[in-house]
Length: 582
Image 1 (tube, rainbow, N blue to C red):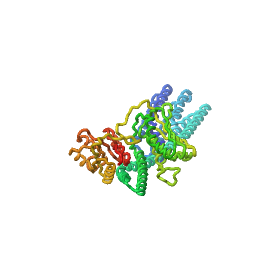
Image 2 (spheres, rainbow, N blue to C red):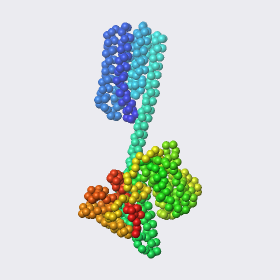
Image 3 (cartoon, rainbow, N blue to C red):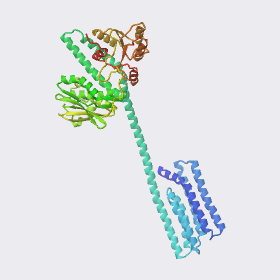
Image 4 (spheres, rainbow, N blue to C red):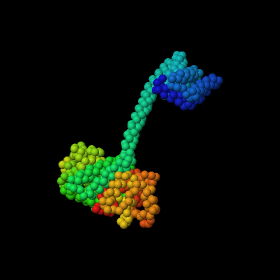
């Protein structure tokens, strides 16, 4: 049996209880109309038969729901239902012989009213299985037609023919409604099939997207987590090259060292860009909103980029008017730094303007340049990783194609987007918007370096430095560089040796420790232990790491310990320690 037929038959049985109520009302009405014209024993016998047929129908309904038949057995149950309908039809057809007396036209009219009500009321519910209506209607109106034709009276004959025609109308209406119901069931099953198919497709698409996201996240998290180990050799190479540059070399040696340092700088730039992208993809970066002074931000940008602009013969200007914005200071500075760096790199003549424009409750930070411009077809593409429109030879000195991608993703973290308008040959305008802030309401911890630079640590210059680094190459490179800078220091490989020296009474002006150390204690725990065991005053301290764990960043910030990211440039190390090269 088709699902459509099965659904129709199940619905037929579902409506049987309401049929019983309607049948009971009409039965009572029939008894009332016949009471004054028909012998009461006849009425009683008919009523008993009518009630028995209705009880039999209810027993059939209960048996149906008790057995819970499969679709294949529903045809037999539908035939049983039709048989019951035929029995009821014969009982109601007999009522016309029993209660309609042609000599008393009122009884004919009253009985026909009951029979018409039975037929019209049964038609919609029996449309789920039309044979059951045929079984009900045919006995009823066959009895009406035979009884009225037997009178031989023209009026009754005409009434009998009209009643038969009414029955045919009910049958036609039932068939039409059955077709409508079938179409409705078909549409329902088609919709269910479509929903199931779409659900499966959506589940498959969601699973594929989930796997892709997990793969991307795993890649990013691996790169972020492995950054410490990846940075170590680059960090050591940077320090060794700085030590080599401090030697007295001839012109050829100095040139080779300069080339090495240029290559290291390119490697650091690429590595930093890749890790910035990985941090953003891995969800490691969490914005911390504060009140940010646009004037102070522009001052820092001016210090960073004005030497670059002067070297290239470009005019770099900043315009602000005391605006404050609500943003993450480091992320906002990263966005603008990348935009200004990109503008200077793509501009050969003219200049770059960085301006703040207040727009109602927001401040629009814009970077204008008079550079090469960007074609309309490339405006979306420039924010993708490793896209460089004017660097087909892939010269790494011209950038890596990561700056705008990092700027775009960083801007999204602070609730903005990088807007771009450009005309080829005329220049470009990049812009981000931030909510205005009326006054500063959060200040960075003292001594914690911002994204823009390294802060000098307060230390007792009469005491030596303590370097704790488990990587042999990095430790030797740091020690060698500090020797060239004439900085008194001690370098140890693990936390245990560092604590032994402190407990032996050695006092230090500053402790510089790697985060990942051999043994059970990490660098942050070591610095806290040294502060507890070092004779007052406690030494200044800083933690160097290649990790991007938000918990580590928060823990160091909570304890007021500067967290410096590898690879730390030699010039930044000089600034941090407050010493100069010899």
